[in-house]
Image (tube, rainbow, N blue to C red; front, top):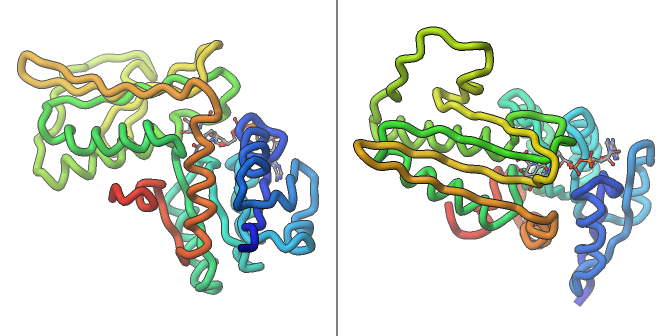
Length: 250
Ligand SMILES: NC(=O)C1=CN([C@@H]2O[C@H](COP(=O)(O)OP(=O)(O)OC[C@H]3O[C@@H](n4cnc5c(N)ncnc54)[C@H](O)[C@@H]3O)[C@@H](O)[C@H]2O)C=CC1
Ligand SMILES: O=C(O)C1=N[C@H](C(=O)O)C[C@H](O)C1
């Protein structure tokens, strides 16, 4: 059987360099290009890449996806910074290239995907829910894509269940003291040397609390999800948001 022809963009970055090694080590894949900043995207066409793994920056990802989708190259995207406007733009590009698939995964690690799922399940049963994400200090964006998605899923689950607004008597606060407001869910971002990627979902009810915590201790935690995404996206046209859809967890 022929191998899946995979390229990595952002190949010299923290997660991109790990992805290069993971693709090279996968028996069913061939790494055909490893692009860094300044490299020409035409190399993707010249090398016959079937799937691109996009791990760059919010400032670069849209240009890279525009190119990939226009050339019918499927994409697995870990880069953060997704807004409704960006997703709408991507859908427009995909409409014009209906056989192309793009997976955007706020987090590729199985534990993080399950944490989001558990948070969604638990959120309607508690009065209060807040999200704390903790990352290495080199991270460019806050809050993390994972925390933003977790908060959105919590908010949607609470809305579906008809949950009451969260209790909060705060009248005065220093700017930022109560975190960011994502669809009514407070999200707090910690940046600390020594950390990689961690998240806690704190849930509180009458006389009890529940804490869901996930820790990515190494970038290897993201690799099985990236490889699964590459295998599945080639047979899944259109936009898939969240690895859970490829794990039968949706
Ligand atoms: N979804 C997930 O599971 C994960 C997502 N991420 C996300 O992936 C992104 C990258 O994270 P890190 O590797 O930590 O950052 P990084 O800064 O170490 O790496 C980004 C790399 O992309 C390169 N780059 C930027 N623009 C480029 C372009 N136009 N073409 C080619 N290369 C370009 C940079 O030079 C750099 O080498 C971030 O948005 C981060 O949040 C990170 C880890 C896991
Ligand atoms: O920048 C990182 O490191 C990570 N980024 C993603 C995010 O913003 O959620 C995924 C993971 O948290 C690591």
